Length: 230
Ligand SMILES: [Zn+2]
Image (cartoon, rainbow, N blue to C red; front, side, top):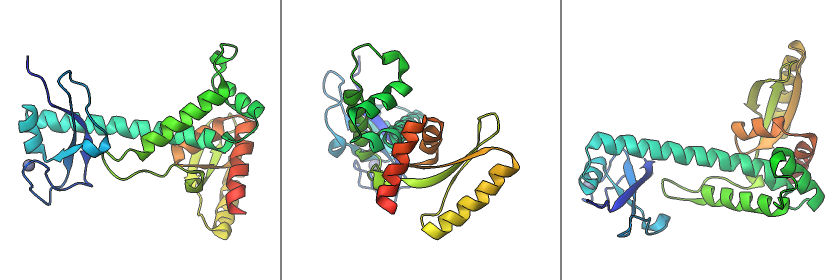
C-alpha cells in the first residue's frame, strides 16, 4: 500500500511560488501538510508547503483534476469552520467576562439539551471562544482573520411580521452615516410592518445568529459595541 506523504489543507492565492520547483507568479498554490509514517499530520501551519498544482499532483501521485477538486473542497471546509468561529465569537465574546449567571443563561439558551447534564456553561463558553480564536488565527491558507470584539461591524437586521429575517445589511462605521443608514432601514421595516434590530458581529451570517438570539445575548452584544464606540 502506498502511504501518502502529504495531506491537502486548502488552496490559496496568497502564496504564489511553488515550494517544490520554485516557479513564481502562480495564480494559486495548494497547501500541503506533511504526514508522518502513520499518516497523521506532522506539523503546524509553519510546516505547510505550498506547491503549484502540477507539482502537488506529482508529489501525491494524483491527477491534477483530483488535486484541484480536493484542494477546493478542503478550502470550502476551512471557510465553513471560519464562519462558525465568527458566529461563536460574535455570540460569546461579549459575555466572556459577564457574570456566571448571565453566561449560563446565554449558553443554555442556545444549548438547552445540555442543561443539568453537568456540562459547565462557563467552561463551554471559554472552550468555544478558544477554539474559534485558534481557527481564525490559523495561517495555513492566508493571513489570520479578524476575531476580536474590536473587529465587529454594525449590522441592521430586519425581521418580517412573522419573525423571519427579511434582510441583513452592514451599516457604515461612521456614527452619522450609521444613524442615517439605520433611519432609512427603519422606514423600510415600518413599510413591511416588520421589526428592526441593530447588532454587532464579525460578519453578516453571525449578525443573523445574534439577531435570532434571546434578549440577553443582544443586551451584552449592544453593551460590548457601546463600550468601544461611545
Ligand atoms: Zn512546482
